[in-house]
Image (cartoon, rainbow, N blue to C red):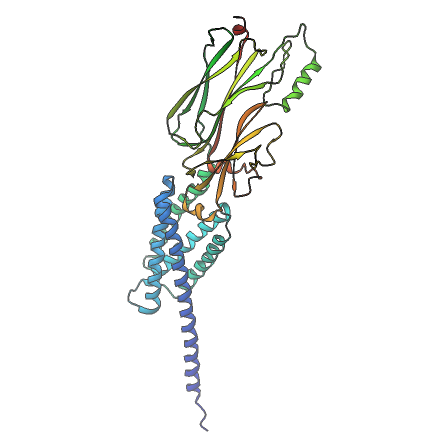
Length: 427
């Protein structure tokens, strides 16, 4: 039996090692290709939808950047094939490395955004896997002794482009959701009372003006105007300090806070009229003004001494959300669902609900669908609007932290008080 020589054995070992190395190299190539191609699909989808449908200019810029990165990763995938198989372009390794670096940086930013703002399960897992895969792809491509012409210039270009991308992404996803709310103004003007022909009743006109002097459009989630009337008899002598304390203790039980007075004996206000003054779902344009007039009528022999007027509006910024329709759902006293944190004993509610869409494609896909629910409440002690943005079936949980994110704005004015003594004296 012929024993193989030492040189033959060494050659065989080398051949086996080369085969193992080639297999590992091919596996690396396949994994890198998979990471880059899946990253291209994810970024391309987010980019195209953001570029065509984002509500803000920075959102459109983010979409354009994501499209460019997707093209870079796709070109990097083609360069990986050339670097490992075809060997037709001398700098294919550099292109593959740039594609892997672009995928790594963008996946890191996406993962940070999804972990901060998203609440779906699939996307954090997918983007986390892509982040780990792109990090490994950078390392694997770098190990192949990539030829880099003018390394300083290439590094400078990568750093500058990375800083610009991170600044834009941070502005769109961190700064904008937390910037101060833009707030329109509601003004109430009480007009001259008019008595009826038989002098048995009178009416008070009230003009409501909504001024939006900002470069922002708003959806109208709800509006309400209500009037509260009070009896205010006068004490024949100065009231004692303990009576002031009794008055102050009532502040926690009623919406209106009557003043502490030396002679006035203020009673809790009673609702005499309430109604909306703008349709739900309408919107207010930037730098626009809306005006309407309400008329409150009372009998001349009314027992009240003062009347106070209030107006409020619940708005949502159109650059933060998309509300296609808000539909009436029901009444709190007739089967409508009202959350436990609302006072259902003293107030009734009309309930409206609509599907809310995010202002960019990333959040739209990585967040569980939200719904805005509006409660138009009224009772003997006043009227008002309450709104929540929650997941379907989670209306019982008030999420006030979402107010700044979705640009919810509650605009209120009042009380604008008027005495009735001059009117009642005309009898």
